Image 1 (cartoon, rainbow, N blue to C red):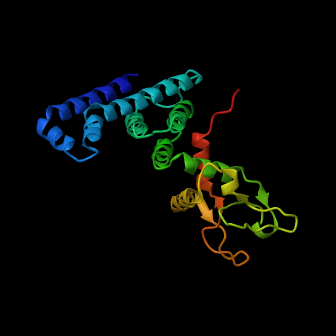
Image 2 (spheres, rainbow, N blue to C red; image 1 turned 90 degrees about the vertical axis):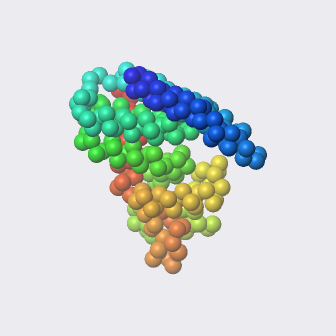
Image 3 (spheres, rainbow, N blue to C red; image 1 turned 90 degrees about the horizontal axis):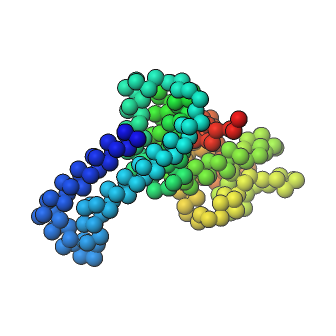
Length: 235
């Protein structure tokens, strides 16, 4: 909780500093339509929201750490301090409670297992760049059953309007059906972003004259990342 208190102090100072700049506040309030809302956010509301997110993360981390039998990592290492500070910065910008919970999973796993520092650092950085939709698409891809014949045993998901199917009627998991809460533009963008980060591979090119950006398979990086943000198995 000491880190949470320190973060709260920094946020409070930033809020106080803004409130004291009268000219800036007056200019901000003068902006048509959105001025008063922006002033409210900068003067306190945004800082309070960030602080509440950090406190929520701290509570979640506390709950998880109670299940850790012993610390397998060096908590006095500067790398641990850097990891925590970076995590707090990303947590403060995470609107989703589930995303904040994933950050807590990474930290608790590192404490329990003592992996090389670049492992949790990379996991935290990658998670910070992803939203819930990305993680949900990855989860579907990783859980997809292997397809034989045309896809040679690969786990495949698709955003094609009419996905390829074999003689038995088996085909890739259609994201639009598996994740109906998202529209096709959002799913297409999520797949493109996951592809850019190396978490998905475009598997459609060269298979039955299919085009690009229609069929995807999870990569080894996706399996690695999923291991860091997964819920630990109950013993």
